Length: 126
Ligand SMILES: [Ca+2]
Ligand SMILES: [Ca+2]
Image (tube, rainbow, N blue to C red; front, side, top):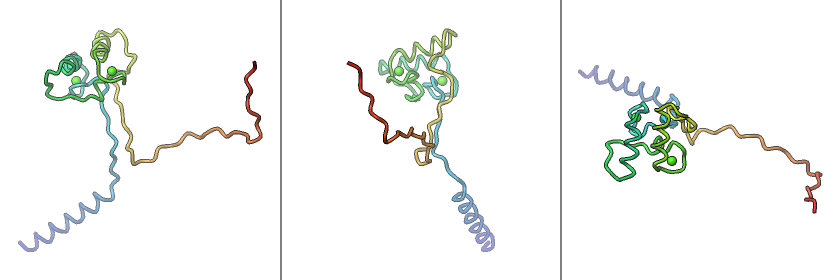
């Protein structure tokens, strides 16, 4: 019994060490238009948005995914999903995965154009 306890303790220490060595990403993702969060975009997502807008309780709701055009939650989001499902258009990339990068991971920076310090300023013509 005592031997099993020592082995168990050793296993816990080993797993903790491995866990600390593995990189942990805080990146998250969601499916644009999947308002109810079930993993697929269906008419239920449009209905979920409509219910939310009139303050009828919804069992689950992901506002990031529901706001398909990024201007805040409104009826246009539900209509856009309906239009996508009817195969009219998909200008908001509904049913595509959106990945939010880990804020602690440094992002590549875009090189800024260097300005010639001796360049004359542009003077607008009169
Ligand atoms: Ca859904
Ligand atoms: Ca919106």
